[in-house]
Length: 136
Image (cartoon, rainbow, N blue to C red):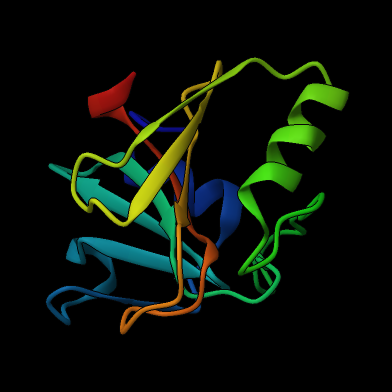
């Protein structure tokens, strides 16, 4: 979906449940939110799909999202086991922005970020996931 133009997102998913950054009109907002999923725009095209506020990720009223095993706090080893069992290729690497986190990056270029221990940012385990055009 990164690279998709705003009008196609609207046609496919309808009006988002929320939008902003900064709060603007719907047709110029940099972020549209569908449930827990944020769609980020740059120059009217999707550049990132992201979430970091979820218990079990939901797509809101616009689309049904199968969370598979995803849930906030999911253990990194359990996630790796599930990926292996499903024959999904991935690599594990340190997070480039936070030394207390690590990323699992799938062959499909989806990044899953895991906090290694409880801290002021939140509990250990899965804390965010995204895909974007910068990492394509």
